[in-house]
Amino acid sequence: MTIRIGALISGTGSNLSAVMAACRSGKIDGRVVFAGADNPGAAGLEKARAAEIPAFVVDYRDMIRQYRQSPESFSAPDDFDAESVYRKTALFEGRPLDEVMRAFLTIRAAAEARLLKEMTAYPCDLLILAGFMRNLTPYFIDRFNTDPARPRIMNIHPALLPAFPGVDGYGDTFRYGCKVGGCTVHFIDYGEDTGPIIGQRSFEILPEDTIDTVRQKGLSLEWELYPYCIQLFAENRLRLKKLAHEQEGIKTERTIVVVQ
Image 1: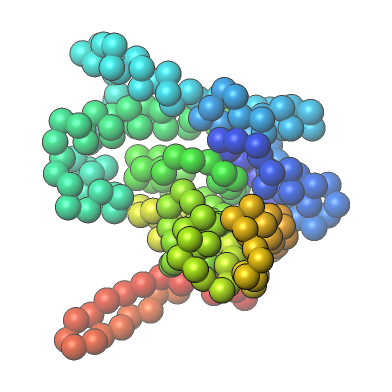
Image 2: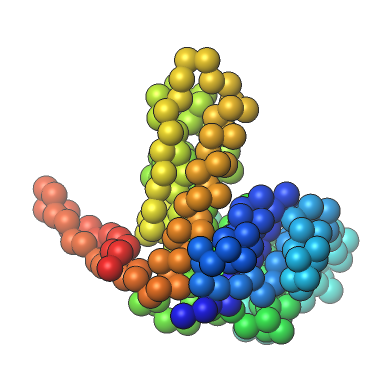
């Protein structure tokens, strides 16, 4: 099956380049159909355009400025409900839905509605986050992931999750003094880097390593792991499985990815 792949980026687009190259070489049975960015200065946009791949920008910072300048005239999407999005998200546990939080979710939903509108011109089977530095909210996720049993948004994270979620996985790994680092590909959910894990790769951190060499080791593995996991999706080999666990009378459930 040849799949259509959409990509969201914020920076250099090194993982986007790796995925485009894997599509050209046949390692991925797919093609990249668009690259979108939240940042007009994202260098990865030029890489996409050079490969004759449509590219667009939804400038999140500009939308934040618009809201601050005139919050009373800033319009959220007609189908946006702040309470519903707030209840679903796991990004802000313990924080009330105050005016600051409501403003954040309103701006984010407006930006995500623009993303979704831009994406309608380029239908895709899989959306990959390739260095996209914005957490997607339930507003976006629910409108793209229309089948809960078949998630379609992948992310690559620079750490061996569940350790070191957040924006600086390699830095956190190095500063903690770990002897092993790595990267993770996972489906996204309503939390921060908490979705079901698809694949991981690891590398040894040596005494002479620096933060720069750790990042380079990780990036080299990212460029191999992401295409591999995307190909598993293209081959329809990824299935979700729920695992129940009970300890001291407390029942919990988590979702894992099974490769068939």
